Length: 71
Image (cartoon, rainbow, N blue to C red; front, side, top):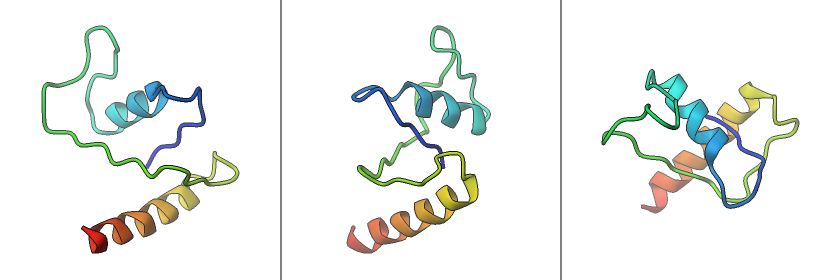
């Protein structure tokens, strides 16, 4: 789980952090991979403070379970 608090309409921070945690080169110029990664964003979900990683994991897992049930 990663958080991104802005700027709006740009996912740079979340993309970089996700790639890093997945062991993918996060460099925006030379990094990345062609396939095999799917992002799921939960719009308007928040964790406060944003630095609370354990809470982000808990909230993210709950939202993911709800998503799977509905789909």
